[in-house]
Length: 296
Image (cartoon, rainbow, N blue to C red; front, side, top):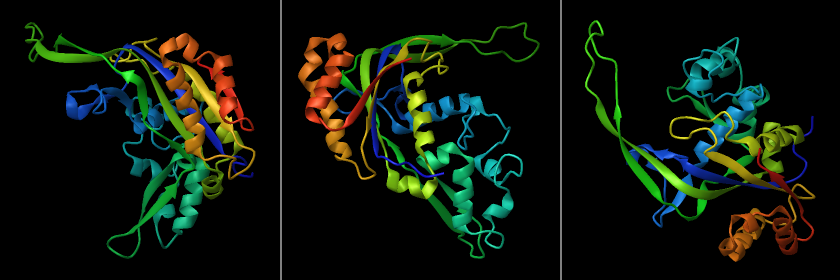
């Protein structure tokens, strides 16, 4: 099967209402913000959600979260070397295989590996071993809010099970819970046909990711992100007419940024009206195919 035939750029616009979209463990799990107060959701967080949605579709995923683990493997190493769920130990032994062969097998088996890439450790006769870097064709930037965010922090009490026979209630402990009151975020991404040739990422894989982006937060509810508190509003999908693309990704993404800057004071309904959004982008990039997809 041939690899990705056309360069693709995309953007995901999502809203947050009374939720913590991405807590910072180094800052008391407060929602991430930059130095100017704009909300941030890391690229790692977004890739985690993409992997989870792909796994919900039944796709084979290498980097599985503990909550969604389907094979019982206790580590990535165990999954990679598993005979049943992975490539087997021989694939990582210099006497049995080569790094190139192992990388090819990993890309064929796991969709997230051939999409985002991965780094594998390869056993060799030297003490240091050999690393197998797989550079993926799909890149995603961190998402940032359109305006500085307002964060509300609430003190809560947490009850835990007491020791002994359970007849005595343990003392409550104090904690904090944080949320973004209301904000809209935008994340940009791209798919490179040149890198796709190395991993085998093809048009069908690109369409699979396109299919799950509008429902990125379905099945992702938690105490910090209650059901319905986060929603994809729009997915913007640009498909170029060649592998190299008509424009750089920076120019493509800036067409949306410019539309936002010009219309942000008109309200969100106007800002992300599909017809106005399409007209604005097509004015900036008239010969580039663009699709506006509503969130799920």
